[in-house]
Length: 385
Image (cartoon, rainbow, N blue to C red):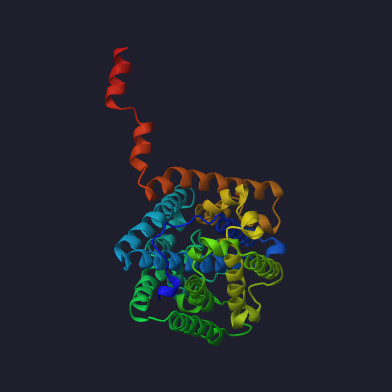
């Protein structure tokens, strides 16, 4: 495995990936607003899966190269500090809102709340026949938590499997082969379980087993093309840069076409289409991690970075707001309602990111509170004056 491991280096910030996050979350929101030009916007979640698979695997491989080990406990603690604060805040707000304005329906929400808290929402919806595309009446405000459950289940299992692979599989090609087999099996399970003409595709859509290929394709890219490969002289290779720009541009165009032209009932998606989308997303990621491509510069622009770094919070908040405020706004309500929904989503996400997620993630919550709360000495001096 030495072929994919360099000397000890710190993680490199890749702003182009924030642009990909922004694009993915825009697609999901556009789909939930029922915009006709985003009938395949739900595929934005698949882009998130590929990106997560890449980043987590790249991070773990770098740690292995730097230290010769993977600290699983430290990894899981960092994941918890990154994901739990925003998630729990949204759950608390949803419960409070339901208690105040829709108390009779609160009793029906407890199962969803517990499943969301323990990251098993996708299987909870499968076992309770909660369709993603066939909601009748008011949908659960936690419907979007299914994708968070799939990712967290991946975070629990994949680091252990990767650690075993790095420790016992000495050849990179062999490790790539194992990951490729895993992705292929997952894709085949999706194709096998899918039944053409079935209106409810919940089992295929929510299943961890049927969606694992997206995360594994991202992981495959990280093993084959780790981000640290673009640190140093290789980043100055003009031929490589131009090739990545061409491939990435074509890939981005295909992603946009699929979001624009496909829909949840297309059998093509469940029988290889989503796999194709994941491969295409991987090409865009490959172009975005290169520091000199024009794709990385465009996707790494200041505005897209702003949305990208807050994409997790935006994803968390957007669906409850769409359900609670002017539901069905994309299906005929005024543009004003839609703008209010989007504005509220960005506002709540920004507050959550600034005052909850970031301080807890980086351990600065105490210092932030100390700045806001007057100290004892400061209070005393004020009183004396």
